[in-house]
Amino acid sequence: MYAIIYGKNPKLSEAEFWAFVRRFGLKVKVVENSMHWIVFEGDKSIERLFHRLGGSLKLVKIIGEGEEAIKDLDYAKLFTVSLYGKDDWKLWRKLGSEIKKNFKSQGPSKFFKPAKVYAMPSELILKGFPEVKDFVFFFSNRVYVGETITLTDPFELKKLDVKRPVQRTILSIPPRLARIMVNLTEIRQGNFLDPFCGIGTIVQEFLLQGLNAYGSDSNPKAIHGAKENLKWLKREFRIKRGANIEVCDARKLKRCFRVKFDAIVTEPYMGKPLKYHPTKEEAIKLANELDRFYYSVFDSFGDVLKKHGRVVFVFPAYKLNDGRIYRKERKWLEKLGFGVMARYTDFEERHRVVRDIHVLKYR
Ligand SMILES: C[S@@+](CC[C@H](N)C(=O)[O-])C[C@H]1O[C@@H](n2cnc3c(N)ncnc32)[C@H](O)[C@@H]1O
Image (cartoon, rainbow, N blue to C red; front, side, top):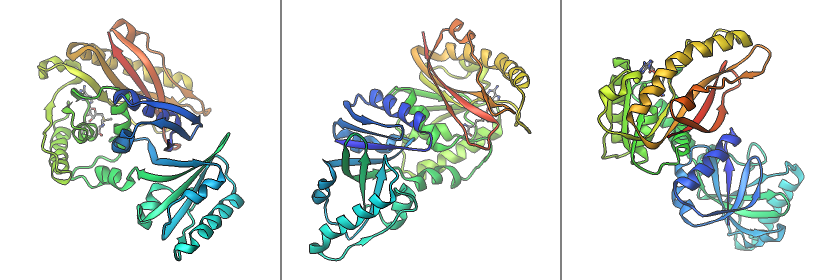
């Protein structure tokens, strides 16, 4: 039995997890489900594949049920305790000292106290995971006791972003989200294209996942940056395969690419940065203007996609001046042959433009 802890956008992380389960044909039976984590029966391959998830933090192996299961934990010189489900400070202390008591006969051990009632991956890595063990408790209908066996490495994700030779802070997409979007396609392998690739964040992810990677952008400077970044990625991450990168207008893809694609994953041009939160009327106007552009872009996608090809596309939605979010409905997608399978939002508090991520299937 395993458990997975979701990241900061748990709804999106959960959607990614299920898309990932289908993508890799994993067998998963839910035991307990909550907004922030899931306990499930599943095959061992999850241990090998976990690092491919962008939106989850920890993979936990469940060793027992009930508080007595503490006795089955393996001795650790250094350890932490993470509680999920019930934020109970007293319980946290009790479990920590009980584990310590259990370990006593095997020599001294040190208990480090995480910043919250649970340890974050960055804390654990800095303390020395896996030498520092993370014992995990889930409080729901029952108590589950486990040990973290794999973490998402936030330092690696950061390196993929800020250590690249070419940066474009405002415009580029977080590597974490690029990974989530690739999983949302549910396509395991094949030809993947980002037709608004900028400096290449999503194309990097295609390469890291061993996919046939293609990228294009209408701005030659961005393409130059993407090529530099991909050279760096190949060196740093020892990747043999290269990517196909072209200067191309996303409305004219068939002029640039001969191959047909299994999936398109992209964050397009989303309009000029907004200086303030728009009113609903202003947001409708902005969205309508951009839709003319997106219509020709999707028309062009139809030229280069395989039958049943998938598209994961970020449309802009808007945080309005009254705090609500305006998300436009786009009936024209259906007319062009694209069925909307799912929609998810992703945004940071300070953002005015919200990501309205669409997962679409071509007829
Ligand atoms: C939001 S950025 C994409 C950023 C990219 N995900 C990254 O991480 O660098 C949008 C990109 O769309 C490009 N763009 C704008 N209009 C375009 C068009 N008609 N065809 C292709 N690319 C276009 C811009 O040059 C810009 O690099």
